[in-house]
Length: 343
Image (cartoon, rainbow, N blue to C red):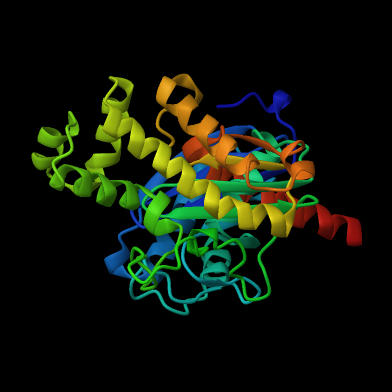
């Protein structure tokens, strides 16, 4: 149990809703995590059941932190999918089938007895980096997360940018290939960034190299795979071991990502772009991760205005798997502070 004398009040709860698990953390006013719990999402049981268990997890985390609900100023909830943020509702979340148009914000507030701030999971993760991560003090921050898809969150002048229809920051669907045979994105359109720079894109391109019989240590491993989602890790490991094709795939991914970044840079003029998610090829701690970042920087800076290239910082994110719930709590804190200032 945390020492209450060392806590910075008030306290906030952050919830990160995923297709597999729900992560819940209790944080103090300085962004320090006091407790953490997780519970399975169990999507097939429907949203009503999930909200009851989510509320139970919130109250469990509060108790685990040695607090009571009265010690919590507000809860932040970050969710994937298409959202209607002003109404607090899901729209058509692809990884939460059957949850369409569910009033998720108000249901969590009802079952937990606490006020709730609602956000998209991408902007929530970006806000975590802005609040307590690698983007502290940045006036314009973009976070790109590489996983099954390509997620994005934008923080401008201390506030997340959601767009007019709660769809701001869908950078994974930036068009980078206009050819007739461009790759298909999972959204059903061709040529989107996500089809090239995501883990899914890496897996598909790697399979093509193997099927084309390029000389690579990836061949036997890819052919023996149980699932396609194992392939990006294989690419990383073989690139670390010096395989030229694996390293070529890493550099190709960096170039594709830079193509998607260029439109963002010239539109938003950020001070910093951070790269996070599960597929960073080891980040700064590995040779491959450093090559990945260096290639992103070289490809990006060579194709944007010189004035921007000289001032833009491109780096890895640092919050990892905690970003979702930390950022959601940070957004709840921001809403609470603004409400206090308005009184």
